[in-house]
Amino acid sequence: PTSPKAQRQHRWPDMPRHLLIRLSSPLIAFGGETIDNFGVIRDFPALSMVTGLIANALGWDRGDDSLHNRLQTRLRMGARLETQGERLTDFQTAQLGANDKAWTTWGTVEERRGGTASYDSPHLRYRDYHTDLTALLALRLESADEPPTLDEVAHALDRPQRPLFIGRKPCLPVGRLVAGWVEADSVLQALQLAPLTNSERGLRAQWPDGEGQLPGDRLVDVCDERNWTSGVHGGWRPVREGLIQTAGNMS
Image 1 (cartoon, rainbow, N blue to C red):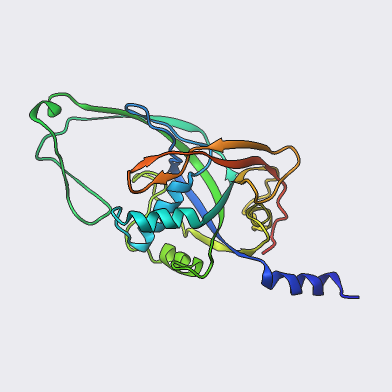
Image 2 (tube, rainbow, N blue to C red):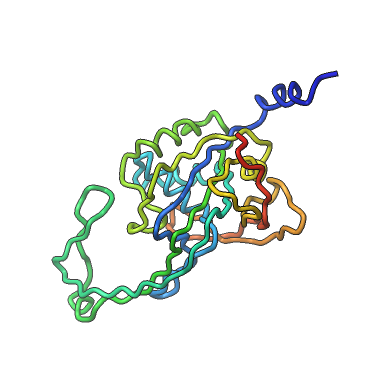
């Protein structure tokens, strides 16, 4: 009979590879539905946010809507929260003029537009942030051989075409985003097998429905897919949320 080790070595080459991405920053914004001038946040990163992060690293223009839409469709992604800080609300106010210019990640100057009356009053808004949060993502692309491949995504995240941020421009990552690779049958299993950076157990996690189940998890619908052609979010996607007991120090 074949030993368990030999069986594992025989099975693993057939398992899908998952790329691990660690998102960590003093401020992180997993943006949710913005209402008026209130920018709220979610507990977990949106599929559209990770699509935009990868696209930015690859150097795509936002006008490349077909590329964005296809990448988002191919993406299978889950997240576990390794540390959870607090939430803060930043009150932002600025008196803007028609000739004011802004910094962008495109390397070009962004100029202001609007009628004369639009500059009479200060620009006011509220933006929520997570503080000192670390999230580990496990993701793969289907189909695996279609460009960009997962290897190309990892290369781009290590050598991005433009500066990267986690949700909003002030949220700059504190370290390397690529955290390694895991071979697993599902996104949930990849999150369970990913190495730990601390001794925490029972980590909150979210993963797509159909990518594994845990006792006591719950099925919820999220609206986190962007139509990159129209520029708006729409539709619902089923995901599962629960506590995972990580294996730790396994790869």
